[in-house]
Image 1 (cartoon, rainbow, N blue to C red):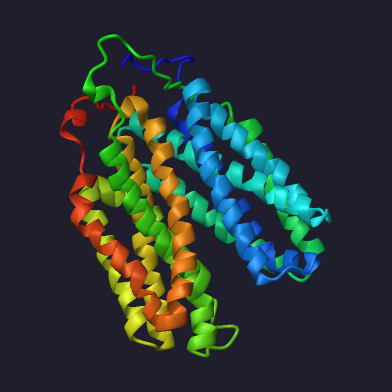
Image 2: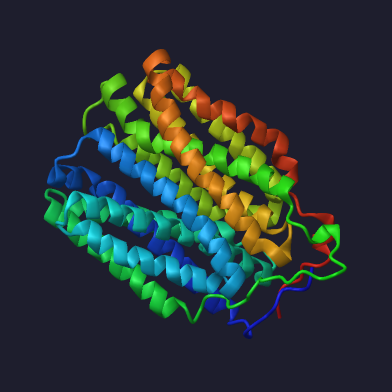
Length: 400
């Protein structure tokens, strides 16, 4: 394979970090206002939980297509262009979702949003990996921290304007404005590198995509998102319907989970620099396993809230660690690697919501949380692969 083509001089590292952080924040804010507006939108259109579930599934499928589209766009024009396209799609879709349009158009707007979501997920991670390669130290978790923090802000905004579909529309339009602003302003900060590769007559085996590594880190991402989707979908239901907590207490499980994710992502880059990715992956995975076990076996409120928080430590670390390690598999083709690993995100999201719900019907919702725990166990045996690849260490030097 030939070397990747540099079509523009790289922008400053500082500007790139700010721009990529902003894109993660726009993604987190937009997603939060979408999912928290669903109850009001459900009332507006008179749809039931089954239709809502199908819309969520549609978003996941469209996001998977979007992730593949990000790969194509990045190969042709670079991940900077892909990220801007994804943000623009979200900026178009969110006002459509907010508008009182017919149900078919409403569903189509969610499909557009899902495609943008997948493109931004994949291309944002591509940009994050490029920045991390230039910095020469771990910074990936910090980008995800911006996502989580902005998601919390989006949820709080929805809480402040809650009550009617009209108020929900205000937050959705705000999400569109944020995405559009980042697309326009941030383009000057996104890394312009193009990773399109042209086949060479003497192409060596090492130029091929590392499919085994993609599957390995994709499995880690899948396990993390099964946990994420299970807790996001079922934690409040479990506390309210099974443990019979009050309406004010039931959301605390999810709040503790998100708080743990945010704390982990704020500190993970420092911990990686000090202890390495392997140790952090093992420790946080063990905490997440213990958290799921605590929820499943100790059916009291304090244990559930604590268990969900422990699960958050695992998810908060594993997702950025997996993308960082995947980006090291083949630095010249990291965009393509990231796009493929990102596909496991949506499979995990669907499995976590659906399978835990199905298991709850037969085993009870508490024991259903053993499923995410079981899927986390193989991560312990894969953790050594999070370490730096020897052949890449010598090649990886901080950008001047």
